[in-house]
Image (cartoon, rainbow, N blue to C red; front, side, top):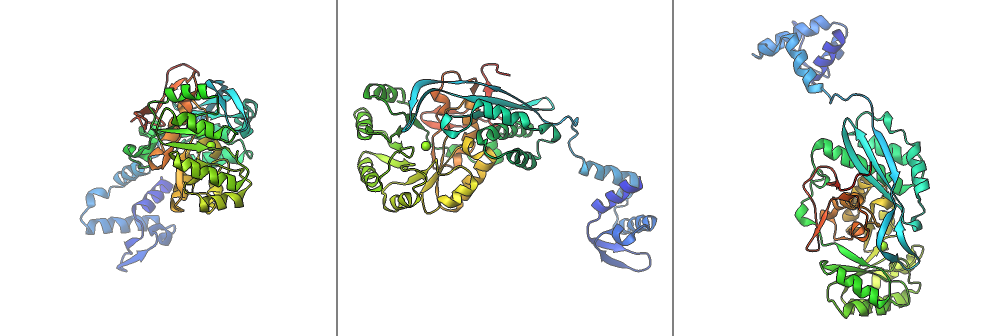
Length: 422
Ligand code: MG
């Protein structure tokens, strides 16, 4: 009782006028600090003060206890802590996906869920092989986590810092926890994250639809499928680059962006190609040269008529600083940067450095794509078509309506299951 009373009084009376009997009023940093063990005196003094200010009704000690116990009350949880579950889920691609240096028909993936007090948040780790993670590495990483130690999901900073500290790398595996945590906390707050961050959903850009490197026949088929999209992202970086663009231009005039995936090695050739692309309605160029060719890319950015965007060069928050002066902008992907929290920080940092921002994705389910889409209102461009490139999406979430990213007013990351996976 005495300790509670002391605490209540400390909360009740921040630095204010405090009256000592017979000594008038004076300022005290804390009534009980100066009162020391003379608690009864302090109480009496406080009672006198209250009487003189005409709010005697609040002076009953029981009333004070009740009033300030309510103020200090925290959510009452059971104390069981967070429960993480995960399972491998192989993403089947609608088309064989060919980039400058690789080709594949599926993408290894691990789905996660984070449970707390009857509420479940969902996450995902998508792991294209070139990123260096695998189902094996992700499940090993997730198995080492002790999330049960966290009894309150709102301690997001502590939880995410812990997950990042367990071992280096494993960015997609870390993102799968981060996304599930955001979904969980958003659901507990009953708000979608774009609202929690204060973004206007009307501001979302159109999303590009990706056309991989392929034969002219297949490229034309993909372009026909992409008819609803207002901008196409064309993969380049092989000898067929001009043929790819000419094939697409033979059937559509929609704006294009190109992703070279580090495929060009000569900067003058790259600049000549960019001038030709400009004449063919291309609006920006992503990762034209190897990420190690920093001086060449900086030269290209300085001389290019189009914005040059860094993707493979920009993984996490510190890379944004390094990209300034080398690229015009950055491509933020949750699987590279460990999730929504760091992506949000990267977005703010890039904008403060006056850099363009693109929100991208891997081939992913609607889970990770909907998570990334929460940031889309503040992006210059969105490349959030990863869920549209797979044939076995177990979730439904963000929609593309008339080519535009369309966020749903649903708590968390805004998804629901269309196929039971957990
Ligand atoms: Mg890229």
